[in-house]
Structure formats: structure tokens, C-alpha cells
Amino acid sequence: MKNISLQIGYAIAPMIARGIMLGPDQPVILHFLDIEQAVESLNGIRMELTDAAFPLLKGVVATTDIVEACKDVNIAIMLGGSPRKEITLRKDMLSTNASIYKVQALILEEHAAADCKVSVVANPANTNALILKQFAPSIPKENITCLTRLDHNRALGQIADRLKVHVSDVKNVIIWGNHSTTQYPEVNHATFTTRNGERPVREHVSDDHWLKTEFITTVQQRGVATIKARKASSAFSAAIAACDHIRDWVFGTPKGTWVSMGVYSNGSYGIPLGLIYSFPVKCEKGKWSIVQGLKIDEYSRAMMDATAKELIEEKSLAKSCLA
Image 1 (cartoon, one colour):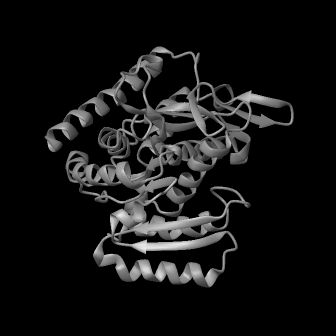
Image 2 (cartoon, one colour; image 1 turned 120 degrees about the vertical axis):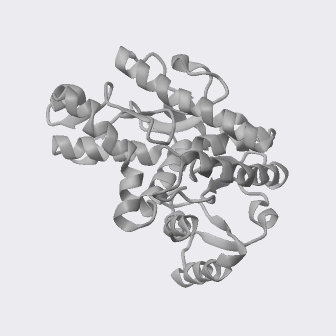
């Protein structure tokens, strides 16, 4: 298994440097952190960024020193952790990563910019983000999120393929809950654009069995399927999703459109407080808000509660690992 954080870092670096994440007018200084064994690869990335001569790139910090990496950062994309493999049990991965994220949280707490926005990508992303929140209390809880945009994008792709439309014509799918195989990809409120205007996805798919079986399991298990296919976790698709997540958070979501983000639950839709849970959100002026008033049917309620139950269990396990 290759170093997945380095793979995603390698993919996302030119995207950020070219302005895909923060726009064509925002200069950036990129900070990379990795373990000592990866120092040569880090230097290689720095060399390539220099050679690419990106106009927006004003500096590169490539280091194995966590304090240097976190110093004054405004946006932290947390890629590192113990990677998932085909045989790795989720609880074992959580136990390994709990201590990693405690240390990273303490350093971000002390050295990151006061307005730092955090997006956790490394699995188990929701609970890693929750650990960050616990040990970096001065960072506003609204500024600590986890990435479920990859799952959201996967759901858009599956629906677009099914309807034989372009993915940009589909919007407002939802990923509820955990970035795991219990997540609930839902299309009850999704629409797609036709020549005659927007139409409901569910009505035009007209196959409830597919929507409740193959569609859900394909999205839920896409990460595992990718590992089996390429012998490594998703890399450039994760990098694109991370760019999407930050870009929409900073610049806002289009009118009438929402996206999925793992955020701190405020009790919306009956989800317990104290969890980082994926909700449909709209973003404006650098802030997110959970979309309210969506009708939740009985099937959705059961699926949403099941993934919340897993997150409660993960939270308990993380607490025991850090005791």
C-alpha cells in the first residue's frame, strides 16, 4: 500500500496552486507535512511545484516538523493517518488514528491561525474530526469538518449514469451520516435539469429497488472497490472532492443547491449533539448552515439512525483509546 496521504497531496497540490480551490486571484503558500520516511518524496513534490512556475504559488513548506507545518495556516486539509487496507477493521484503524489526531489537534490549537478552517479526509474522517474538536477547543466547532464530498460526488455520478445525463445537470443528492459503509446516500430531494426545466430524480429513475439497493451499496462501498481495483485508496477523486469542499465553503454554494459536509450536529433531523455527521448544507460568506425542513420518510429515518449509531459507537471507542 502506497502512502495515500502523499498520493492525495501530490494530486491536490497543483489544483490548489492553479486556483481550483481558492480561485484565480488568491496567492497561496502550501505547507506539506509527512513522516521522516517520506522526506525525499516531499522534496520531490517541492521541486515539481517550483518547476511548474505557478503564478499563484508564493511559497512551499515541505517538512516533517508538525509545528512548522501548522504555523499560521488558514486552511488545514488533514490527509494523514493510518490508511485503510482491504483487511483493516474500521475499529483498528480508529484506534491507531485517535492518538495521531490528538497530537495534531494540540499543535493546530497552538499554532494555526485563529480562523483556521479544517477538513479531515483521513479515515475514520468523522471521528478524527471529532477528536480534533475535542483537543483544539479554541478553533470554533463550525470550523472543523470532515470530507463527505467524495461520497456526494460519487452519488451524483451514479445518478447521472443512470439517467444518461451530464453530472453537472444533477444536484441536491445527500450523504447522511458517517463516511463509512453505513452512510446513507439519498435522492428524495435531488433534481436534474432537462430542456423543460428541473425534474425529480426519483420520479425519473422510477426504480425504487435500485435506489434502495445497488445505488446505495455502490456509493457506500466505492472506496473499497477502488482499493481492490488499484491496490490503493482513492487519490485524485479525493483531491478533487477536497477542493470542492473548501471552495464551496469559502465562496458559497450556488443558489438552490446544497452539498454534503460532515459537520458538528446541532440536533437537526434528530441527530444527537456531539457527533460530526454528514448533512446537506448551504454555504455563504465562509459559513455553512444545515438545510432545514426536508421531509424524512420512514426508510430514511431508519438509515439515518443506523449511521448515527455507528458514529456513537466510534465516539465511545475513541474516548476509550484516549483515556
